[in-house]
Length: 317
Image 1 (cartoon, rainbow, N blue to C red):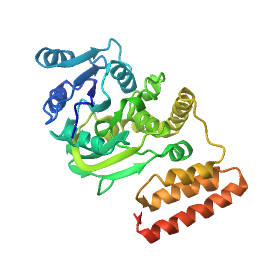
Image 2 (tube, rainbow, N blue to C red):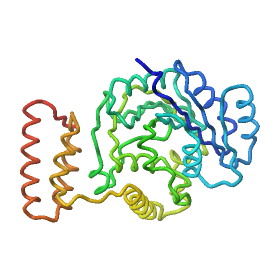
Image 3 (cartoon, rainbow, N blue to C red):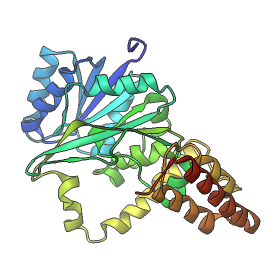
Image 4 (cartoon, one colour):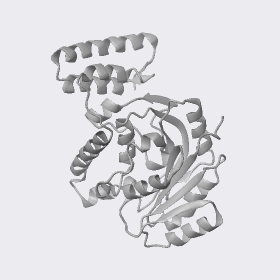
């Protein structure tokens, strides 16, 4: 593997996680292949996070940004991205931990598959809950998902600390101005945004990240659902606003012949499963306005299904 030509940035976002921060930063520092830069963004913590960060910066090659005002996770992503110089950007929440071979394994994957723009991996839960979470049992090329995400809001990715993205993809997404919409769950912006701007996504089935479960873990404990019963409804409109922003920023629009584009997009997925097929069938049936192409698209989709059933590239799962 030739990793010398690929510069890597690890972006660590922190808010009041001083008790966990050292483990997170050390896990980034102690990789079998070293990050070219590590940038910590502290979102105006009220604990002793600033002291912990200053110590790391003094003893190691770690950059940091101490924000004066608490503005949430997306704001921290924006700040870290603007400071990053890497070709591939890795994200780490300050309460999570990288396995020692995370970077080496992921870079190997990028090196083998030059068309790869976005990788997420399996992870192990630890803390108050234990277990391994795998989206799929094997490594997978997930193809492109522009139409799938735009029409149905499909979320093809995982938690923040499992994500890495090429910078040319991220600069089409970040910075995003609507920081109040995404004070939490800002990884949605990365996952949805990457799909919309045409990232080719891949999945690594090996658990390379440890995801800490604890009382203040916002995502796992769904505390925002307890405080706001209309959270999911509001999230739909936030998603809609996000999609509009990214589409306008990149001069993108829904194609006139949706069925034709769907047929091309589904062919970028080397190993289809039943959910993939159902998603594209629904899109053609519900969103294609041209009646001729609606019928033709459905026929061609089933023809393609028959073809891959014969070749054994279809999974019933």
